[in-house]
Every structure is written in C-alpha cells, then in structure tokens.
Image (cartoon, rainbow, N blue to C red; front, side, top):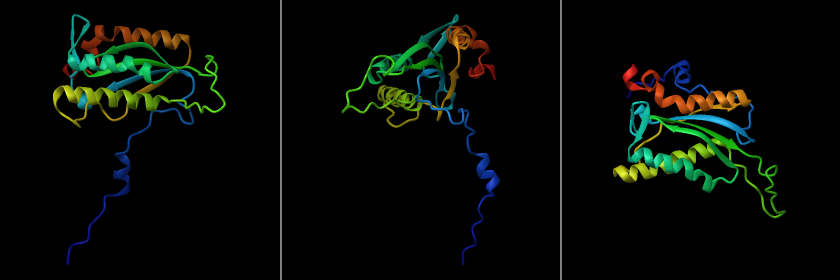
Length: 183
C-alpha cells in the first residue's frame, strides 16, 4: 500500500502567487496613456549593450524595435510615445485614443472592438519572440518574462517625468537595478 500523499500547506501555495500591481477596477482598454516596462526572460541581456550612454542594438534588439513600431499597423487606436530598448528590458509609453472621439465613427453594422493594454503588450511579446526565436533557431524558447510593469499616466507632469526617465535610461544603465552588473 502506497504512503498517503501530503499536500503543501495552503499558505505556501498562495505565497507563490504574483501580487498584481494593477489598479483595482480600472479599465485598461480606456483612452489614456500608459507607461510599460517589459523584461527579458531571466533578465538576460539579449537585446544589445550600452556603450557610452547609448544603446547599441544587436539583431534581436532590432527585431524588438521593428515589432514595437509595427504595432501601429495592427491597432488603429494606438499611439506610441517615448520608447527605449535596454539590454534586458524595454520602456515605452503607449497611448490609447478614444476611436469615436477621434472621429472614427463605426458604421451601424460594424462592431468596434477596443484593444486593451494587456492585448497590445501580449501581441508585442508574441510577435517579437517569434522573430527572435526564428533568428536564433530556437523555436518556442522564452524571450520575455511573464507579465510586465504598467503605470497609468495621470497628468502632463507625470507624462513629462516618465518621458525623461525613458530617454535618459541608457545614460543611467550603470545604476539601473535591471543591470546584472550592479548586483
């Protein structure tokens, strides 16, 4: 007779769950500006390197650059703002426009589907992962870390501060907590 299996205490199981940083009851598909940070899997520096405060993209970094900007082809209510690729993460500002307020009045038979931030980030990660893995000959290998950081930009001062942070990120790489050499 086999020994009975003991399950882990419930407390330990719940400790492994990720704590959501999202605003409770906030609709991330509504018009507004969002700051996102997306890290590579295990924070591997696979997108390029920083030299003298400037990012030097490798082939994978170039793919990421192209995939980010091609999001505009897939999401008509999307506007891209400041963006930077770091060796192991990207920072970007995404603005979702109100399609009706922008003059895109759907025909009565057309059901407009508003794309939320989660779907847009998922698409970016999927498109770029496929192309990077195709380049490296590693189909199915993880490129991006699960999840991402987002911040709802609430006003012009917040937007200005985040833009400055994004633009100056390569200059501060030596102090960046994502830099594996600073640990």
